[in-house]
Image (cartoon, rainbow, N blue to C red; front, side, top):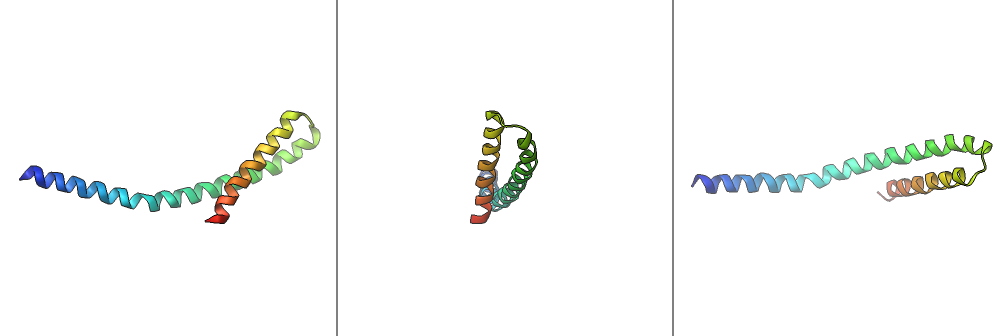
Length: 80
């Protein structure tokens, strides 16, 4: 009898935690996307100043990468 009660209580706790997490994870993902969007926007502004002095392929590709990632994270925020 004790085993059955223990088993049922474990299942109840597990199922309640599984259903409660997606909402928390969703909120965390929104905050992390907002942080990443602002981070890459700041990087673009700072790197733009450095890019004026440089014209090598590495600098150009780095800037393109920053812009691409900023677009991805900022687009996710707009969709939510």
